Structures are given as structure tokens and as C-alpha cells.
Amino acid sequence: MRVNNLPPLRMRQKQVGAIIDELGGTSHVAKMLGVQPSAVSNWRRDGRLPARTYLPLIDRLKGSDIVLFGYLWGMADITVGRDL
Image (cartoon, rainbow, N blue to C red):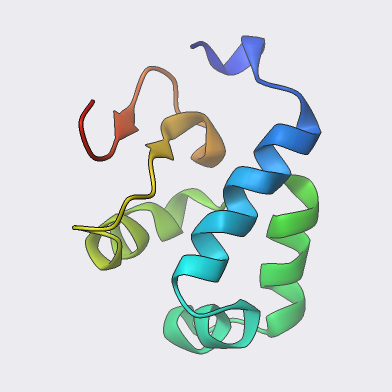
């Protein structure tokens, strides 16, 4: 999947929300990454994560059932997850 051919916003919001929820919710993710909870809420709303969060998040999600799509960080053709 290419960045210029993104899934619908609602789908991306759901995917970002699942990542945040898997990691303990908005407040926990904010503390973990050293940002305000409002920033994490904005990521959920926008269906996109800042590129700088990629490595910390994939590291913490190892072994989970969450599939991480690169387009959520603005990257193309990267998918990390179980059974891919």
C-alpha cells in the first residue's frame, strides 16, 4: 500500500486507536513517549502517528497481535506484525 493510496480515515483512526489502547491508553502512551495526553488524542483523531514514535512503539508491541502498518507513520510498504 502506498502513502498516496491510504485507507479511509476511519480505518486509520481505528488502527491508531488499537495501538494506543494495546499500550495502556492515552495517558500511559503519553507518559511513555514524554508528550501531553492531548498529543496522543490528536494522533488518534488524525489516524497518524509521528515518525519518531515508530521504533519505541514497535519495540513495545513485539509479541502482540497488533499489526503495524507503515502508512500510520507516513511510510510506504512497511508492515510489521504477527503472521505476515
